[in-house]
Image (cartoon, rainbow, N blue to C red; front, side, top):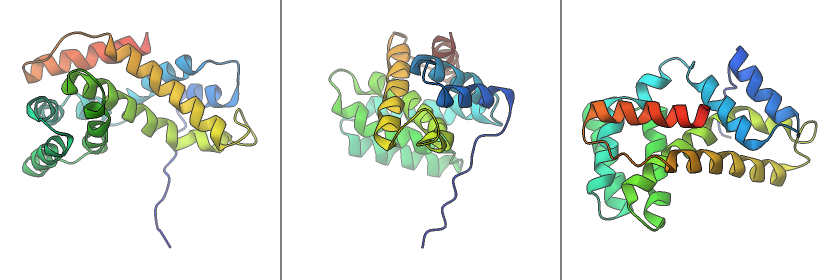
Length: 183
């Protein structure tokens, strides 16, 4: 038997707005994505982890890698050296295979898929509670909805053309990306 526990989102005003999106079909996926990121900004330590020099180093690792495997190994090595693993760093690893499977430049693809993975992480904390009794008749409907939410984030972050060269520029990029998603 596994001992994994699903930790729900806190019952703050921001996460209550997200929950309303899971409960009501008339609220579009794009709006739910916006509310997820608005609520996430209030998560303890989240903005700092996303804007951290560690995440910038992960970005640079993907940029210099020629394969998904080398990017993953480089990110894991970076996290180990920094001794600062976070859920955001774990999601950075998850974004690598998708980034390398897309046409174009892997590190630019990685950025938008990092934001997509983070979005999915937050949506997964609570959305399953709305299957059957809420917005989603079944798990397939939930999966399709979450895909639309992620795609909104990918599209929004994908419009940003800047390519951060320093940790300070990374912070600026992250803030622009969050602003783009939150409207």
